[in-house]
Amino acid sequence: MMRRTSIIVLSCAGLADAVYLWIGHNAPDTMVCVGEGCERVQANPHALLWGLPVAMYGALLYLALLVISVVQSVVQRRAAHPAVNHGVRSSIAFISTTGAAFSGYLTWVEAFVIHAWCVWCVLSFGIIVSISVLAWLERSDPGQVQTRQSARRTDFAAISLSFVIAAPLVLLGHRSSKPAGSAYPLPDDLVRAHLVRPDSSWVGAISPVISVVEFADFQCPGCREAQEAVRAIQNQYGSRIRFVFRNLPLASVHPYAEQAAEAAECAARQGRFWKMVDLLYAKQADLRLPAISEYAAEAGVDRKRFTDCLVSGKMAEHVRRDIADATALGIRGTPTFVVAGKRLEGAVDYRRLAETIEAEIRFQEGRTGYGRLQSEVAR
Image (tube, rainbow, N blue to C red; front, top):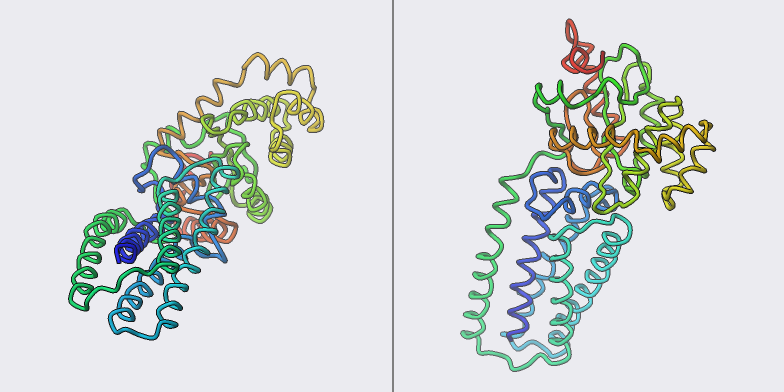
């Protein structure tokens, strides 16, 4: 009986954790987390399954386990046929094991693909594994059936304890939530001071309607995956927007990212920045110095000038300034896009980026005079 009670408590805790992740999917900056892991995991394409947040499926999984556990309690109290009891216990065991396997895969993705840890995701993995172990133990040895009155007291205590554990987490997620698919304006003074520098690399219109700024890390898998969307945006809106690139190497988890950023800036001094960007993303698996030198030659730069620039650390200050600007703007994860001075929250794909750009272009073109970013940044 204690195993079934523990499954109910853990299912409620898992449901609260999944709901918190689901709410935070569109507002990763507001999540209480250790370091940058939660924001980077939530912004990665792996956080979506069939276009919907993975956390949503997690919430449905825990809700199903909770409902079935309550059904199991009713079945046991009414002394149902043993085959029915066994079937209910088996369903909990098989569902939780499937969830544990998928959660294990996602944990592997965090470790070896995203290279970042979300503590709430790891907690969910621990919860679902615990439920799976308890469910298999319950299936093989259901234990002694309590009296109806005793079972009701136990269920009431378990569900009450679960709500005590879950309520603060859900309330915290609700208070920090933001509507899905929204963009949030950065303060005007920060936009003017930190969003774009005179020597930032850009492509597109000389007199743009709006500016789009990306903060990226060349060793970040999510940034590489976003590059196809970036190129499509540049091709589609090149005559109306200015696309600006800023470096945000996350050196704590990507040891070669800062060196790659400096390499791109050294290539920019020879007018080959965008070609170097494409090569660094395409060959992201090896960003060590010898390999980067080969990519630079492929990009068409003067190899000696490039090597002198990179080895001397001439562009290190440029990269550090980009990082400082990102910090000042409250940007900690990559890739992060700022469209017309508004930072996009949560996972960003081509559709969402294009929709945001279209909306901002319509807004700016419908105004008299210059838009805020047009007058402050895209000059």
